[in-house]
Amino acid sequence: MRHFNLFSNILITKGAGRILISDLQRKISDLYPLELYDVIEELKNESIENILENYDIESQQIIHEYIDFLLEKEYGFITHGDWDKNFLPLSNEFQEVSRISNVFIEIDNVIILDKIKNSINNLGVKYLVIYCNKELSLKEYQDIDNKFKDSVLEGIEIYAPFHNALNKEFFQILNQTTTRIYNFVFYNCDEIPLKTKEAFRFNINFNHENLKISACGKVDLKYFNTNLPKVLEAINHNSCLHKKIGIDIHGNIKNCPLMPENYGNIHHSSLEEAVMQNNFKKYWNLTKDSIETCKDCEFRYICTDCRAYTENNHNNKDGLDVSKPLKCGYNPYTCTWEDWSKNPLKQKALEHYNMENILN
Ligand code: SF4
Ligand code: SF4
Image (cartoon, rainbow, N blue to C red):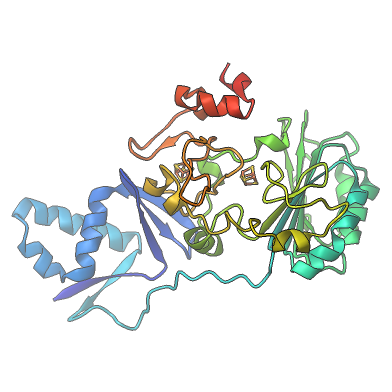
């Protein structure tokens, strides 16, 4: 008797119309029809021969083809006599020792970062994302990095407007004088200034669009992430807001800079005090399994949630907004994508966020 064993690093997420098979080791996900899900479920409980007995000749051929396909994709392997019991299932537990892992701050002046420096260390923050709405000089980029040179931060990511001084020499100096910045996104960029791919310590992205902070929260295949820690976090917690602090341009401490509720202000209180407040963590454990529409979507563990912009039409018994993210155009029931901003059913929510101009 032959038995099919699924590798432990293969995660299958069933949606309303398709399944997503994620190879958590190779960091890739692929879409398949629901029938494959049924075959895999049968293979978990019966030997290949027992399964084949229940089908006519034509269907047996299809089962053989599915098994060959699963083997070809290296989703599993065959053993004789019994399933291989030496490979324990992968634990879905998510562990994060930091009290806060991410801080997302909107600034118009680098000096404001002094207000959060101590809290970053006290909370064990790993990543700092800075959105700046004004151009920054070489010295300001160096100052940002320097402020955190002895901190617990693992990395700093900066979004800032493009300007003409951003040339090869500028980045060569930054490469030699900074340690924590690992990603730059320059927006409003007319022309890409670096013709050759230079090997810098950090990534540099030039974006033609005027990336407003309110553009955050867009759901698109290109942002999906099959990465083991991110997938485990999404299975157990909110994939955007868990262990995150957002600080808006006025210094208000929030879950995300674009959400309305605030829990203090960095000019008068600390991030530690904000985290201690009753409701601060209310969205941390809201997974996509509890969000309308997303709960039936095959992408739910590789797609980042957004609670700042939602369809704003469902609250759960605890008063949490469990509506589908507004900026998602995917319909898991028809397995089709459409332009979310043109959907007439979203018009009320677009009005709520004063975004009607997008629809027009
Ligand atoms: S809640 Fe939405 S807008 Fe806020 S950080 Fe997350 S994705 Fe961006
Ligand atoms: S419905 Fe949209 S937002 Fe929800 S999980 Fe699917 S792709 Fe992501």
